[in-house]
Length: 196
Image 1 (cartoon, rainbow, N blue to C red):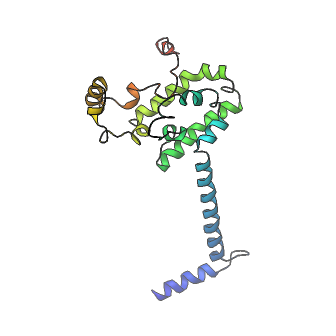
Image 2: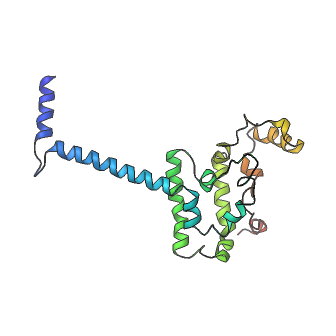
């Protein structure tokens, strides 16, 4: 055992061309911490409403629509921001979503959604991608705030209570199946029937 530790120590102290393996290992460790800290900081900075509204063509369109909904202003003062609904909370899904969102940055840079008119022309496509994402993850971002265990069906309207008990509790449907347009204006859905 002692000889194995001694050999390991000799390898670590043995110089490469100019530096010892121990120095290179320690340097790599420190560089990794700096890289990780920078990466995580960049991830968090891009996960704010200010970033979304400032860097996307959202300020004059969907952000204005959000302001008139209960998710923005309500009696309890709890407010959903862009990342609450559009960015998963767990780390690996968040990174994957950020990679997907890079296409939106591409759209801004290369002018595919850089005006309100162009954005409107892409609204159905953008919404469809979000709806498919919500459907695929069982409306996880909705469920981060709205859990069926916390819902008091007796305080809901008769119709809402019946629908939630029939579809939500059974798992037959997920939130986005019924609540498209809850925070943003719906695109022209007749275009879906036409195959656009």
